[in-house]
Image: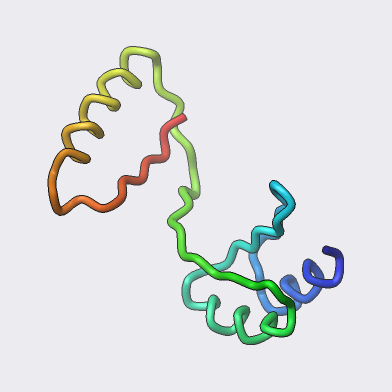
Length: 88
């Protein structure tokens, strides 16, 4: 992992985290193609785009229950594909 981690940092990664036998590389969306190109020699190599909250919000139990109801209602809409939240 060390070689890949160093290459990712040199390519402009904002953060590199080892998790579940994978190396997760975090970068700004506009840097993704640059990092993909620079790390293309590492195989297997897969990229996905995911929104990551820059800050988290702690909610009380009652707030979490209310949020769950709101998210369920949103998810029930046919055109909703994914839901993101920054609550913990």
